[in-house]
Image 1: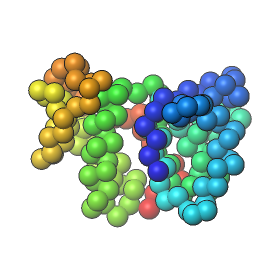
Image 2: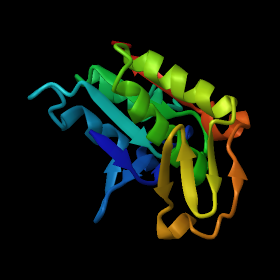
Image 3: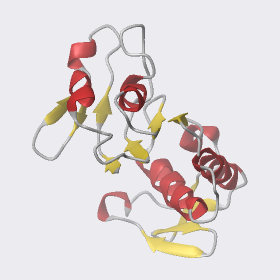
Image 4: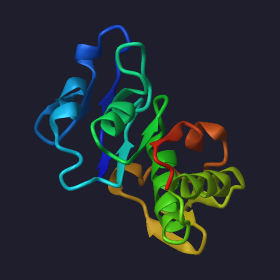
Length: 163
């Protein structure tokens, strides 16, 4: 399951933490009730800001609660992330996942590809290895961008079962 959306984790006000769905906000405490293990969810990707950030009340945030509720692995972010960087990382992560037997290794390889400058924006396209993908309209005006800085890729972490 992949959720590419807006997320907000408020450490002092966990009740105000949410993931924005199309028509409503999914509250942090609702994650426990979603039946993540019927059928089992192998991987939940929370492609949104601060979804792996937590505190004493919600250790590891949305991603950690999802794992506690039955998701085998969750991919989330520790801080506010860039749309362009997240697009690059997620695109490369799914490419790596096709050949990497371990989900955490696919994430590591995607992050290394970005650190080496192999994933970037150029002429309105995301370049990731041999792939050239037209940018979505909302990113079309970003211009050429080097995504090798850790800000673009290091905020994401895998929680739960790495396989």
